[in-house]
Length: 326
Image 1 (cartoon, rainbow, N blue to C red):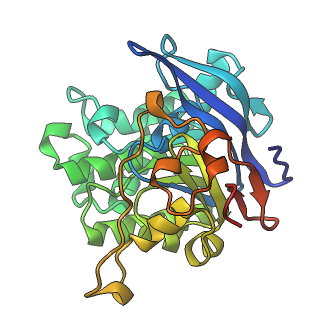
Image 2: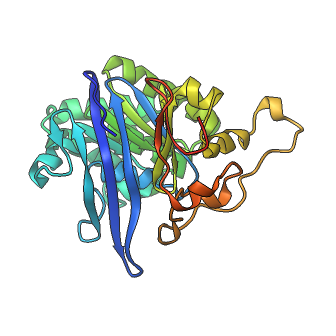
Image 3: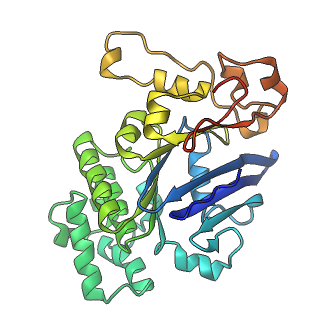
């Protein structure tokens, strides 16, 4: 599926990712395509194990090079294909043009290095300014993500912070270089609701201030519905539905998207029995031959068992991959 847009920042076309494991080569991401426009928030939603995080790190080839391969696909960031460019060019883009907030803050912080030194490292490496301006920006960002006594905190080590505070530090670190694309993988999962709201407001402010685009990964349909411009629903390594937030939330078409939204608790469902999606997301080695959602789908047809679902364009902005829906 070819995607073209004059105002796009990144375009992913027919991406496939294969991991080499003890069980053999597993195709964990299969033929996914999407684009993110400038100053747009695009969300990937789905259950754990659907491939959202793998997709995110694949965009800049952060998976272990001796385990991951990309048999097909193009990831075009502005004019650069990130899957085929040199590692030198990729290092110039990572952290500066494309920054990550990971779900687990400990993975992006060095326990033996002061918080301040870690915050300014990327800023200085990419020659964004001198050390004085770096420290000033780090202090400002710590305040903006809700950390008090920011100046003193710069001289502390990660073990002096709670898990929620470390997540806020990792968010500040990702924003140090004013990236064009921020990839946020469950960035609010370890943070209380009050700070969640503060951070969401910060992301929306930065989207406007520096025209930043955001790839926001979450299982929280409610959160995404208030944040994203467009939503992609992932299931078992495939993008099964893409549309504007209104289209996907208010009028989902794919059986999996419908099931996700029906299972989400809302005020209207208070006191009522919530719908559940029976079964679990299959392991990549056990993906069904046809539609990956076949075993759990209430609307399945015989063709779904053996054949790859087709793409259906429901409107200029709304696409599904399904035989029975639409």
